[in-house]
Image 1 (cartoon, helix red, strand yellow):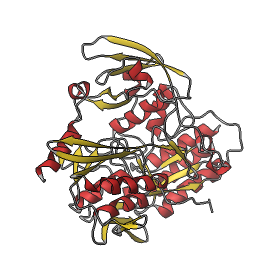
Image 2 (cartoon, rainbow, N blue to C red):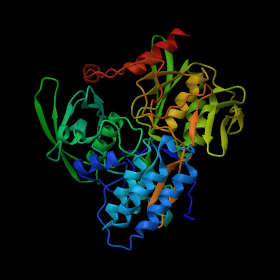
Image 3 (tube, rainbow, N blue to C red):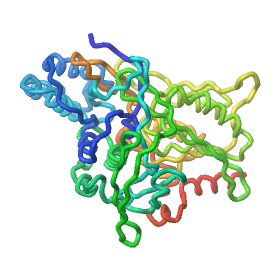
Image 4 (tube, helix red, strand yellow):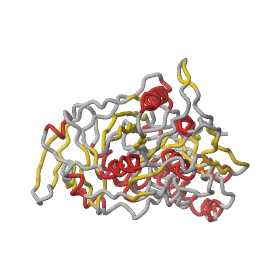
Length: 451
């Protein structure tokens, strides 16, 4: 029986693989939900590996009908292709094709070459950053953030600019190769484009990347940026590439109110202590905003821990539906912090989301929204919300496979459709160029209206 690793909820992140790829490689990898790695001469154990992956899905998929797919027929069709595979990459393509037939998130193959090194006791170094983020706006990759002091800002790159090429490779041509929706499951095209573009821009610390942008007037700007070290916490889980965790908080003042804003990259235990401390420190604010834009997922227990700050009585965030029973996401109120009583935060709570908010971020935002405890602002989430686990295959690759479907207290699933905001606030290029965060402004205005 293949070895199991602990329960996981995580959507693929642009900042977690130690292998950095060309833009074209990254885009193709994103479409397949696996990283491109060189072919490796080895005993493929091809049929055994294929059979193991097929059997795991067959026996552990939360839906006995496999999302309406004739799983026996899929195995019979693709098993001969696996047996005929000439190298490990070909075998991986066959298994990925098999998983893609399910058209669901959290079914993918993780090659052993891109796994984290936590098992050996030495975490990988964070990927180098150019100091920019982007989003797809009206089909174009637009720079949304260039933090002061980072290479992009120093070089004069401005929010609102469109990314045209990376190391001489046309972004438009590369994006044209992405399918309308990922062949490997429910993953919005905007989500996949963001993920793989950021993967193509990131790279080893100290290495250069040549980028071409187009400003709002249509003028081209070519810059070469040197990647610098990211301020992030390495975090390894067996069978996954290294995650690099980032966390920030601030207090904004608008319309006579003080609002605490907390944002973080993933839901993992190294951030719990700081999240608890921040939420206790911000209890005197008129409202709190949890910014989940760019948060690609993580461990559901961390979501329950954070939710505990906002309830006075035990409650349920929702239910994980599985093949052989259900698991309720119980939330116990946070009554104490350190050595003193704190009680729940009873002020208004807003959550910011967009297409890069996935997996556990959808569980938290959708669950809190259904309970009426939070109001969601921004745009629809990724729609990749299935609880999953990792299983090691005979060839030492890992299979990420969903074992449940999360349902809110209203019985709604976010898989495929995502979380629809209570107040839709769409990004525009003009707002980004002007430095306006309309989603945050809308959330703060709502909090002020309740004062």
